[in-house]
Length: 223
Image 1 (cartoon, rainbow, N blue to C red):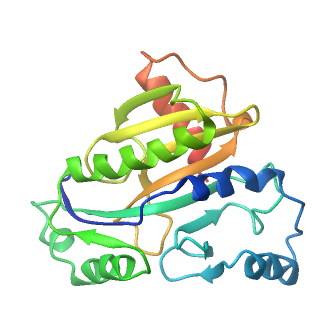
Image 2: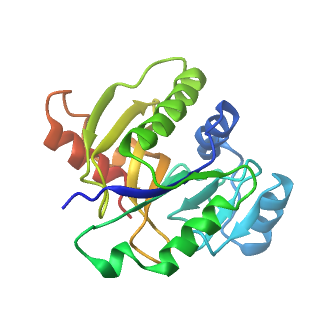
Image 3: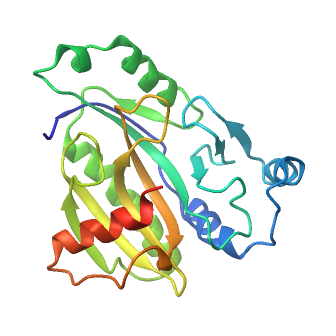
């Protein structure tokens, strides 16, 4: 079931943030040891983040970065996700979800982060505007438009069908769009840019194969 969006919080994605994410796999290897990772986190002006997304980082640009490895630095096999937006989809037929005050509090927490702003209520068009701005930043950094653009809700637990965009480097897939949250709550939806190895799935399906594209995205961002 697709739900309307009640609240949106976001911090615009910048070209610099895209460049940093895309460059992480090629950085000098930093071991999974806590002290080495912590030193790299501090060197970059990042900090550890556990309240917005479990076991993640806050970058110097105040986006939230999470990875399926303990260290995202110099690890070409890591799946890495940069969250620049958070939305709260509401089921108007379920009072438990539509009126959960703790979910409003979580959205407030995202909105209160430095450089973040919020809109409440909002529409799927508001979310699309945030994704379009982020797509411009990715396109500017890579110097090319996305290879695939299509609308789907397959990667979210609940919410409107929003646009997914796919780029590829020689080694990694860059996927921009909504996805189910990896936080401690499960009801919210991330707007994120992921950087994952191309080996996570088969070759990129054709533009008219929406089921194949949805499966390809899921194979790359699911962990």
